[in-house]
Amino acid sequence: MKRKSLTWLLCTAMTALLLAGCGNSAETMDSGQTAQESKTAEENKGEDSKQAEPAADANAADGELPTITFVHGYYHDESEWAAAAEMRSIYQEFADAHKDEFHFVIQADETGAEGIYNTALNDISAGEFYDIADFGGWDITPVASAAGMILDLKPYLDEDRGFKDGAGVCYEQNLTEDGKIYSVREQIEGVGFWYNEALFKEAGADTPDAWKTWDDFNGAVDKLTAAGIMPFGLNAGWPTNILTAAYLQRSGDSRNFYAEGKMTESFNQPAFVDTLSFIQKNALQKIDSANFGPGGDDDEAYRSDFFAGKTAMLFNGVWDAGGSVDCEAGAENIKPAVFPTDEAGKKAALLSGGCGYVVSSQLDEAQTAAAVEFIKYMTSPEVAARIIEKGIGMAPSTAVDYDALADSVEAPEAKLLVEACRLCQNADYQALGLGNNFGDAEGEIQAKYAGLKDGSKTVESAVEELDAFLEAAE
Image 1 (cartoon, rainbow, N blue to C red):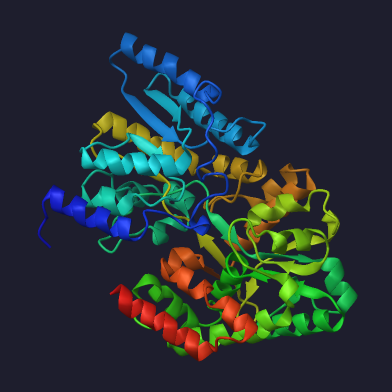
Image 2: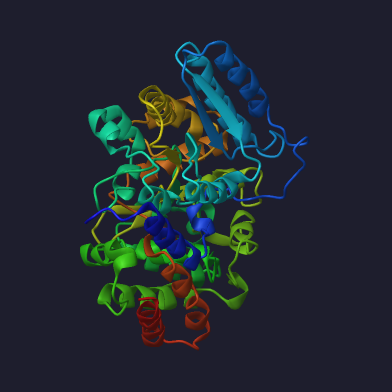
């Protein structure tokens, strides 16, 4: 394919993004990384921003050392979000360790990852880009790569096995059709589910750790409902999306359909039709209307009911280990699990990396080396273990020693997080979340849940509507 002009590429890529809303669903962003209520610059001036000033002065005094500026969205005060302060400490330790090699200037953007993304869109049109920035799930790579503004990280990953192991699922997930990788992350969205062991025992149902196939899931749900225990809460959004995506990992045929993702030409395929039938009959019809919410970011009833001991399962990610603290259900009863398949004993989890660190292709050799060194550091086993240990989230690294990590943490919720991450990392099948996988079609899929719940839609009519959406989007 011949190289198009820069103007043409930018117009094409940015038009596509604008048509898509230039946005991102909550599923593709880390919690806490979305834009939050702004404060004044004086109120929000982070510790790392202050630390950036002497670094810049040092560079002026010593012109021989290269300078690279890193922009991130962890501006929050420690009392507001402790993880943000921990991330800033991790960044600063890298800067301090390399102060004799280069000046690593750290800048927190108070607009968060969304603001960093929007600034990048504007800067690209002017032929500029950050030295290196963390986009926190907001995918800048289509526009930036079309403009030739960002660095292909694949050669660096391929020459360093440790770096590739640290990138984990990001290597395959972020590999473009032309064989390039423009971004990796230090955190991923790891999703399985949580269950209340005491409620399963009360119902005489097999617990998820003993399940071999989805038939075991169905049997457990039947026993829970027979005992008068609500098996789970759902809504027309996130938790039902998780169950839909998980059930699509049940077999080779369903995984092949799922792998088509945004490129699928029709939802009228047995793998998907059977999945919607399962969602309707084995999930939506197993709960009463009080346990089915409208969806949306403010609909947290499915979580609160679980931690209050009112439901037996919670479909949510590893980060909800923190929800067990002082919960009415009893922290000792909360356990992590990953999903069964129809291959006896094989397990599945949803792991979504997405866009994270992106490096400018306009840097000189020394600056580029510094930027790559920083990403290697952020995906190293040491930092990965720290991210998990401090309760920040799940790291993509396949080199984490989970046994050692389990021994090093003491808080019950930290041990839960370690085990949840271990289960997701060791799952036999790992797939993107529904939104990451199907893009805009995710919204169309979840719009069918309410109708499938109340009977106003059949599986067949829902599939017809989804195919009409695909045809209109062409």
